[in-house]
Amino acid sequence: MRREGIGPILETGPGQWFAGPGTTQTPLGRALLAGLSGIDPVGYDLRPDLARITAPTLVVGGSLDVATPLDHARERADGIADATLEACAVGHLAIEQPEAVGAAR
Image 1 (cartoon, rainbow, N blue to C red):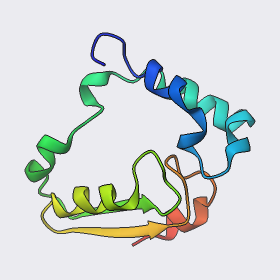
Image 2: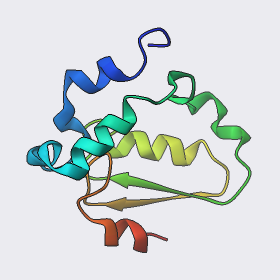
Image 3: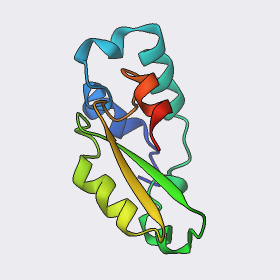
């Protein structure tokens, strides 16, 4: 992945990033996927560094997220001292319910 970047992951199933399959065809869905394709793969998986986070942290997990299921979000929250997990009915990029994500505490 470090050589090829995030692009190949996005191409394997663009629908996995959203709860609604049609979201990939909306202007916002297309813009989010295009933005992801330029992410530096070095920062894509930070699980080994979770224990280094010392600030109180809110991990928001999507109950409809197939890319990073809720149990993976729980692992991330468990890996950070003083972290809280809040589940919202959203997919991976959480654009379906912005109010729910914004209200998470």
